[in-house]
Image 1 (cartoon, helix red, strand yellow):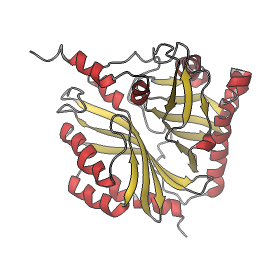
Image 2 (cartoon, rainbow, N blue to C red; image 1 turned 60 degrees about the vertical axis):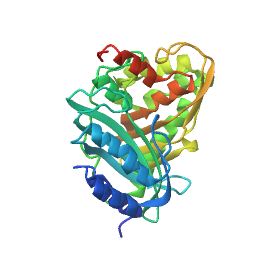
Image 3 (tube, rainbow, N blue to C red; image 1 turned 90 degrees about the horizontal axis):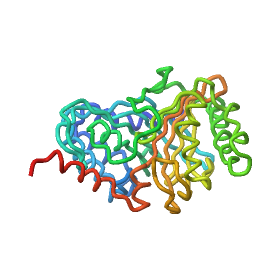
Image 4 (cartoon, rainbow, N blue to C red; image 1 turned 180 degrees about the horizontal axis):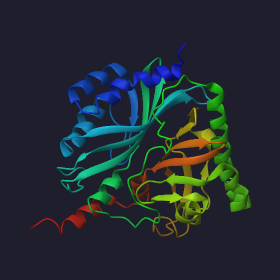
Length: 338
């Protein structure tokens, strides 16, 4: 008998397929049939929380398609599972791509190929979408347009790949034991990160959970890192230096697993105070913030081999009173003749 998680992935197939060649009329029909009328749709800043699911098509996707006329969706991971609270979710990781022909969100067009990563999570109820939590890597588009209004990344900025094993779209029957083993590994790792406050880096036991050749794929603005030391140098140390009181728990969000893959979403998932220097070049503003961070992990031989991470960085800047888009428009004055 096919599991509910396989069925939920199949339910999303027409929605994803309508975005391959981006047929807005087909997407409207699919969205109307698939989404509950009052489904909660939450997107990255500045897109925000939408009035209804059709706004996702008529406002958000229509605007993106106007800027990228040959817009195409490419998924690299599609997974599904239940949280410990009994909620069923489907997680999709991938990127939108095409020719950046017209400005979007005041980001100048380039006329060239552009990519924008997405992490999208769909809460499913009786085969329909009841909630969406999704981050798009909008800063990645800024970077490719040469219109970067923030501090340089410490990590490597590049086109983040899909899984090394190329099995992120595999559709085998759901195996509860396999999923539980992956879930336990990632959940325990996340919980151990909280030991930093009392025991420092050693108490986090990174070597216990992370493969020595792990890859950590962060969002634009942070970049990617290779190996445990790379992860520490280019993300973890600056992050904890700037916000040593970081509080986050895997149990407070929505974590689920499917085979070797684990997904996590929360809106928000962490709370902290920017009390010191070191993260993203942001000064110690002593400002309490919350953070949306949506993750996918791939487990291999009992260790974490790959981790895809998107953070709503633009919303972090919003919370400390910095309008990144206003800064972007200031930069663009030099490009536009008066």
